[in-house]
Length: 334
Picture 1: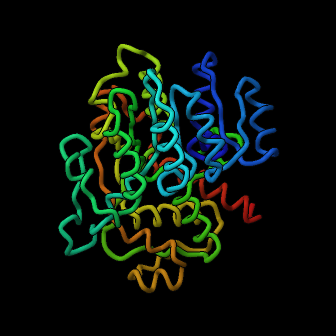
Picture 2: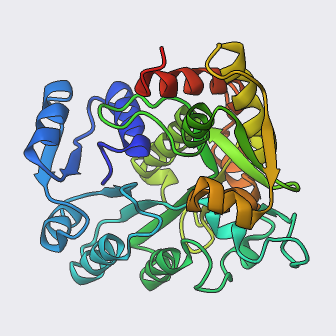
Picture 3: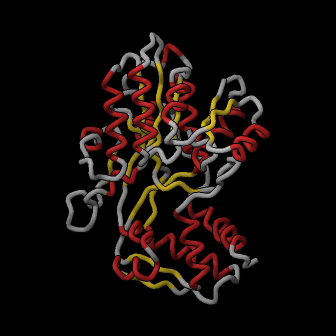
């Protein structure tokens, strides 16, 4: 699920390139997008439907050895419940792996100033008990709980992993959606207003390049396809959270860099940045700005230790000029 999205589209590119022998079925919502997939990946099978197509999802789940979900998967209860119900209902002797894409937004819960979680860096191995004990009100937690319940239902047969990327950046290699959310949003806003809006104080998130995220997910898929390695309780199950990060950035720093690149390119007249409190930032810039007044600090030790994964792509700072120019092109400024 998610083959035409930013995350899933990049993974499909890498998966098809690396393992043309894999039999892949993707869920696509309409014929137009199905035609795009079919033209580029003729060996890929297509199931028409969306996240609410419970019968279609169930039909494909029971045929699969591995299920991967990145179609608004962090917050879409319906589709994850459909996967869970199908896996529980149609019992077979074979092991089935489910790789679920969530996000480190989970860690923003009670992470503001004066709160006990403020500034805490969560390690996905040493802090796993805390990570799996967040209240249901935390971001993504209600969906994560469905996956965790599935992990404990039949651990010998159903093997789950929850992949939690931090802020994702970089141009995706998928066929439809190629850009991320945060940096392009900031770039577009700076270009439209001719100045930057930055949050007062220090607000830090981890980040990872979309290609590094795809490499990690591919590693899990390859392990799942190797019978002897697929049963590891460290790799799969109730503790199998994979935080995916290549470092951290302060949101105000990102805004300043966007403004600098836009000014250097002659797209705005100055490098003005307005530092606002949350109320004023949301009032002037819209509700998305509330996102920049949160902390989500993580350390992805599980992938580094168990998968020998390390980020290899350029850091987020090295992609900001590209993002600025891409948004300027969309706005007709070039």
